[in-house]
Image (cartoon, rainbow, N blue to C red):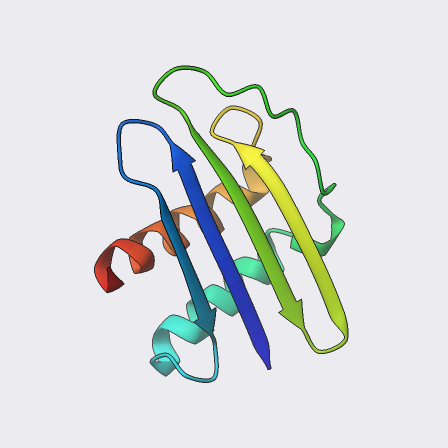
Length: 99
């Protein structure tokens, strides 16, 4: 079972916090998130990236619980590792569609 907590703050948009239980969302979305999670090497990304957040920039906190593994990553639009961006974009799109 994989659980994802996604938080976005700052920018010109509203803040959002949402939890995704990959066993409870449509299979196509769950598979896409799982693939993006794997491709991002999420569990290898340092917990704290450079968190300087510029004007109109978002800050993200993502926590993933997968089996016995728990990892949180804090990043901003400019400090986000390139490998993480597709995962964050998918989470944002799903969160906006849900809320």
